[in-house]
Length: 403
Ligand SMILES: *Cc1c(COP(=O)(O)O)cnc(C)c1O
Image 1 (cartoon, helix red, strand yellow):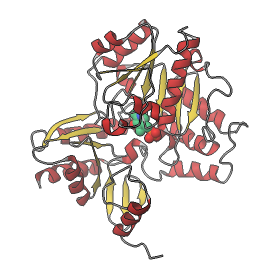
Image 2 (cartoon, protein in one colour; image 1 turned 180 degrees about the horizontal axis):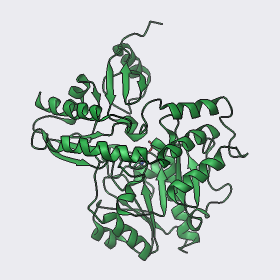
Image 3 (tube, protein in one colour; image 1 turned 45 degrees about the vertical axis):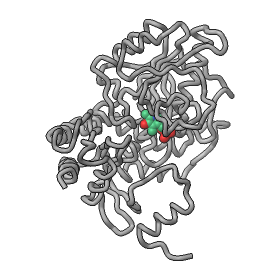
Image 4 (cartoon, helix red, strand yellow; image 1 turned 90 degrees about the horizontal axis):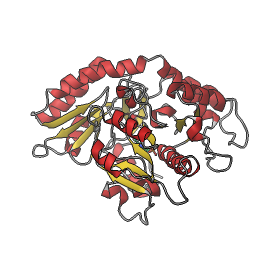
């Protein structure tokens, strides 16, 4: 076997043996600390993607690494055939953070979304009283909820959906942020509305003011569950614990993932009250690794860090700095900027530059970001960045556009 030394060597190896379900930037990361990563040649980059917000607390946060190390040497997996001394405390703390009675832990975000859909369907039958095979769920155009066959069945992204049929029935798509379209789509058969309070993968798309409140009121009025997929928007990214908090809205089901595992392990969960989650009975749902003691110990530390409010405050304060810097670039290479907290979607002027080219130029300036849907770039640096880092990030965008 030949020695692997350069980025090109590792990229060639990945190309040779790993399926091409992504098209990454040509950067091979070997180490991370805080808001920064280093490639195999030792070049340093500001990580402005942060694992799609899974790394809200940065790389290797000392509190999270300590929690992981403690648990790693103690107990990592029991399966749910037995109890563990980590699941109860984790569930209690996540219930407190969400204000809900119960939580159901899983691993990936897509599994948590699937869990919410199964819960909604059972609730439709057993609580709302609909006949077998009834019960539609309304979803939003431009959604991203993961990659399972059911979830891609109601995706409006051709690339994510094409040729994965036959598709799961029972979903109705309405335009995002359009309360009248949503109202018109509701029927006696509707059991739930599933939405992202801010569409992350869609490009940090923020609905009109009052939309979430209107959805909440409509769900209550028509006896439907409001399911908020806060996998990317939640856990301090927007300046609040949940993006729904911006409109003081409490959904019936929170769907959480990404940052819940501290960027160390996949850990997801849904949180809801007894009236909803009691439809789940022994044997009717589960996962071998779901709620395992290793993940639970890390998740509990994540929750403790969120309970101080420090990260929410940082996101709000640093987000204001980022927003002010980015707003000045509209008309200077950017067509539009959307932001909430330390989270921004930039639409580049496609006449000037592609999203991918902008990311290449930013990487040359030591900042990593990723384009989504061609001409949109999402910025979501770890919430541990400094104000200087944020200004460096904005300068990299500015200079890359001006090049
Ligand atoms: C990333 C994401 C998911 C899927 O999570 P995975 O862990 O990749 O399965 C679902 N919903 C939203 C809003 C996401 O951002």
